[in-house]
Image (cartoon, rainbow, N blue to C red):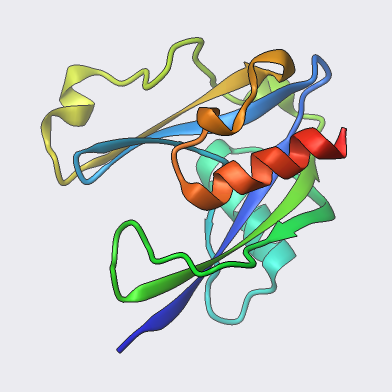
Length: 152
């Protein structure tokens, strides 16, 4: 049975106008995406995004303006029976110093990626000048970045 998988993602820009991205190792593959994740039953999109930010980054965020909701068919990269609906919001925080980030793409230890069934995640800031749709791995994130760049 096909299902809808609703995802919520945040656009967090720091005072230096850099975007926070999540580098992830999932099921033996590497992805760069925006922070966020799956909506849980009983959650609104804004509450779900705030929860995801705390879980993933440790940051408390205020969810702001809506940027984009998927407007085309996208099958899940991880389950070919699920259709993905992704919702993107701007998020704001005053806790930038509280997040551990790396300067390096996919900054994982060999042990973190040795098990192809494991997951790993690291965060990094991408300078606005270097930000393009190609920064992202997933098709819907690419659209969100195009819209973000048009927005400013």
